[in-house]
Length: 188
Image (cartoon, one colour):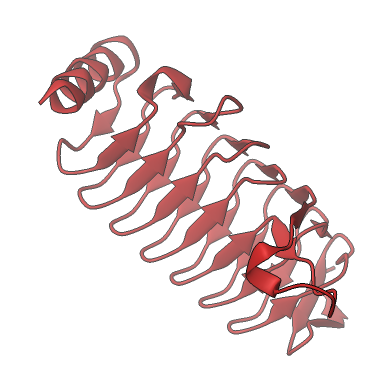
């Protein structure tokens, strides 16, 4: 009940101070670590978990669509202005995730900023994870069901094709597709 009340107060304050629309049907955890800009939209059934200290920061006019999930983790998540995270996407901030202005994240995308270690001497589930920051530039498009793995930087203006798995850096204005994603042409 307390979480529901806190979410109601948070949603009302965001609406009054910044013109945001945060659905009461969204799941918000760690509200004290969530910062939203002006005119943001968080749709019903979307989830934001900012219970770790690094938190989640939205720029202005960010949209989080239904069933999208943002987990701040120990590294945090920062979404620039006019970023849209589409349905069923996951952004995990264990190693930190920074997404630049005007970037579109398609449905079902996974942005995961950690990897499990795989030493044969121990069970995988007992091994520590290796967290690495992900940086996605401005004016990018991450196509449906793409996966962006820990430690990757995607340059400004890049397009990642649907279903691609990004395991290494992608230069600015590149169009990258495949598993693993490879640069096939340039937008310029």
